[in-house]
Length: 395
Image (cartoon, rainbow, N blue to C red; front, side, top):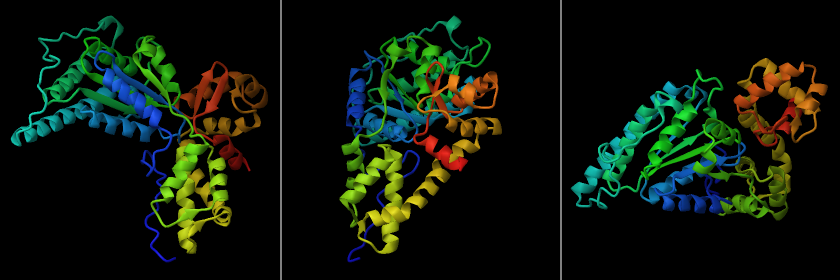
């Protein structure tokens, strides 16, 4: 090889931004529009999609876009323990406190160098000037605490010349309301607090990002969420977009790809951004190890077993490992049914478990984020090409 090939340009990590963000211009444009319409229109978006479509990368891009539009920003990845109201508050409180501290520090630096920014006071946010109310009979007793700390954060943001404050929560399907009134209602708490503040045209924004189950969780928590959030479905890339994601990354290096290899890779990855990065990284490393200057079909044929080994090990098996043996058994048995979707009628007749047991296990798999229910009696896997993985496991 006559020149150094440089570093591997592909980045198959969790939420790692690829060198070329393909196919998301429309989503970014719509997000900018939401910010421009605030605070008269709530700056809320709901990002949903399967695993591997690049939701977390897009969420990070939204955060950068918001900072560029002079909004204060805070992000948090939710986990199942956040489904308890106190746990969610316990992590939100220090996050918002740290946001206010950073705003205060930045404001002091600006003042020291003579740049005090825009005039403060576009929206009066002291508690005497703006009275935010919420229906305590319809909200958690902790909602008031969250309203107070969110208001204080927005006040600090506008005090230091920012347009407002945007809170971005990833893996938001992790929080949902318990069906019984005496249970946990962390999602209602979050929605009620945010809505109460936004009704007063206070520049607070909320972006929730998660699996397709998020949309249903929001509607069950508060029926008005369909009007409160602008929905954004993050899907697969089309063929030109996937091709660009693969080939544009290679332009950063001395390695090139043959046309037939690109065509085959794009067909195999089915438009999923994570798979593009995984295939690209493995092929690039294989070419470097072989001293080749081109990604060819020969490289692809030799590398494919290693690609699938890594895909299973890194992407699929960790999801299966967190499940109970009974949940794993149901998933592995589901491959005998037609797909998509999995239908409970067929599963009840094909899987050697009682209908009641199957129904319970399906509900638990939805809660675990392995399945989602597009409609009653039908289920789909949240990870792309998951059925093929289960088939490989069953061999």
